[in-house]
Image (cartoon, rainbow, N blue to C red):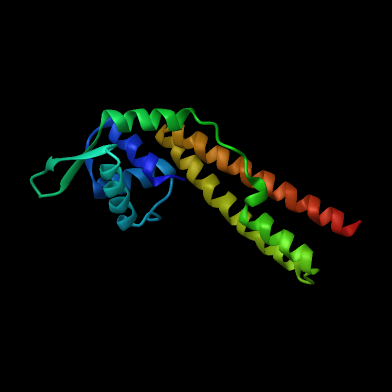
Length: 168
């Protein structure tokens, strides 16, 4: 997840101030309260330095407004066209599991069970959220949540394969 490109995306639509960018970025990502406000302002400073964004005055509450520049729009469009490589081998849990195999960790099954429990909790939470989003009619968020659910399902299937091979 790139805060830089998230901010450029939001500013592409309209100029805005930092805190509103934080809220909209969290909404865009489907998360709540996960982005540090300091990260937003640090990123805005870098975007201004790189001439992708400029300060566009203040509102009646003295909050700075930001807007995207022509160069910022070009940068966003270039990024949007770059394919995203699949890095499943670098996934944190897969790396942790590989480490456990390397040392012959005796509690591997406990580790797998805990991971499955966490995945199932995430599946239940996302399924509830998906239903709420569907009722709201927000197709983009619905499809993003559905994609997350499919990835979680794939992770569960992988853990089941590991467990079945352990029994063989």
